[in-house]
Image (cartoon, rainbow, N blue to C red):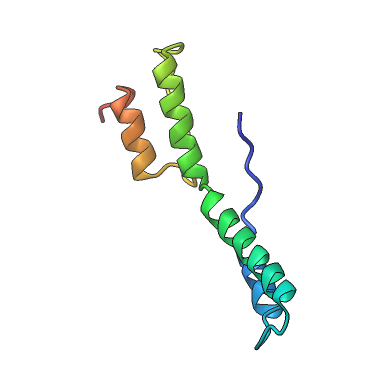
Length: 96
């Protein structure tokens, strides 16, 4: 199981804006600033939304075929069109 830290993108961006300088006189300052910017970008790219994680979980459970009769229940905060489609592709949807 993979745990994901909360998304601190806005806080990181605020920090980068607060610590910005008009010019960098020394190469070490430039290097430190680049490292900060790279960390921000890496964290931004690594963050996955709850719905993306839920879709991956449904796909993994279905590929293992251990619970063929089990149905899914998600709250509206997670249930998106993409997640609904993943569940329906697994043949687990109800006809209204």
